Length: 267
Image 1 (cartoon, rainbow, N blue to C red):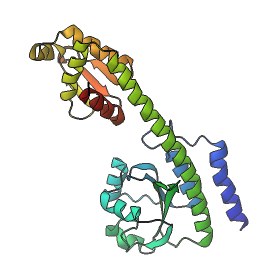
Image 2: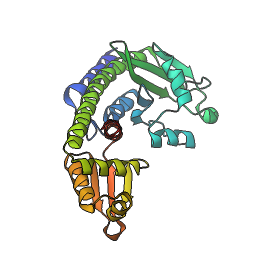
Image 3: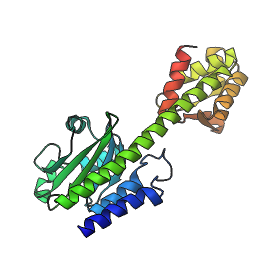
């Protein structure tokens, strides 16, 4: 029991004294530091996932690196079939065997992980499902002490996820307002130029030649350049010259792109 108490205190110290954010709250894996510390302490594979399956933190204690697990980690996303099982859980489900569809261990490696167990903790706040904590042990079940620590870790993670979610919503609102103000600052001709350029996007970035667009859509090159500069100054896009190959522009993130499309649709 003393060891459990000591480990509980270590978990509390992580939030009280450590900077748990990896680089920044907007990093690809914002919970990776927290995941690494907890996974090492609990000696488990540990994944923190949002309610839509986005992986926010990964700790690979047992180095399971087959093709399926590599895909999860590279895409930072749990697949739909696995999320269907997770979203059906309302309470912690412990010691899930490797034969169960909710195991975090790949079934194709069943012989290597015959005794492996998975524990899943759904994270809720104010009745809203924020995400999941998925933990795996390779050789033995989760003991009562393990589950006490896991549940406490789940509470800590839930608190931090709520903070992250709240900040994320606030950031998205600021970005939406920024897009609105930036587009409002454009002249009619500049706004029309941006509408044309946005239509050419296939993804988040684009390479184009201003002179070609000017001729094809009867817009002056100066208008195109000024519109791009204004959006870049507003922090909506990044751009750089490619010399004779034209200009490269990139929209900062998906939320900004969505806001751009919405604003332009109604302008």
